[in-house]
Length: 329
Image (cartoon, rainbow, N blue to C red; front, top):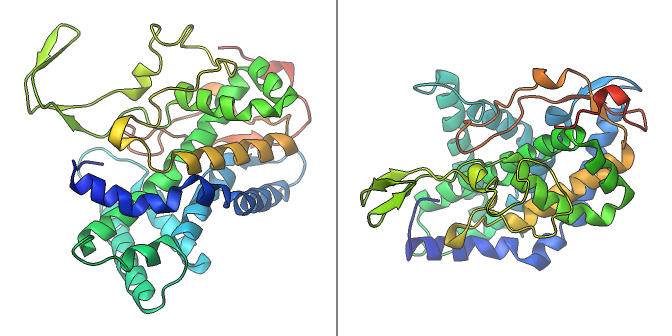
């Protein structure tokens, strides 16, 4: 995220082989199976029960997928999952002891995973990367890359799913249009990326020369923070930008970045989100919030680069949305 060519080119080329369109498309049956199993688990709570859609669906779905892609054994995923939950909760000031412990645990686990794959390689991405010569990928770069892939491979998509459900409930006409024509799902995913800002800011960038923005001159070699969420609400680019409209037709936005740092896993994120919404809305088209809309809080992640719900209490049935939940914002 924070390196320039030629190092960036080298690192991205090594990892990008796992995210080719053909390889990602081949993952769809597995993603559907995971979504179906998670929905079965939620439905087991019984009709009318309140369930947390973040904890029980939006978060574990992409985590299971990235775990399988990297070759993390299923038995190890709950432990890794728990560490990342601690690490991505967010805090003010210096990290608390539990966050440091979680970070150390993750790095230690990844080191062990790398050593295991050196001895017993498989068909997963970690095995592919450990087979690369040391002069092409150092151990530090490998561990950093794996850490980043796990974070970017699950938390952003989890936020998109949770944020997207709330947006669709806020705009019931858009939800009904999507239910009436599921073929609009790919366009709806792009609009939800634009509208809900699961990644509201880019990682830090540095000016290479003086630049003037909004009448303010920023000198060269100054750190800047680019607000992707603001760009995606630009009225000069998007008519009625503060409204959700799955029929915009042009999915081009900055929600997945731009240029050489464009999201490496964009095809996988779109696949996971599409399957997640198709499975959820196909089985529970009448899901509704179990709490007042104003009681929801967006605290998952650091609040700067990541923006996701802490929890999303919902009732999965009935098959239609009661009038009291039809709040058009």
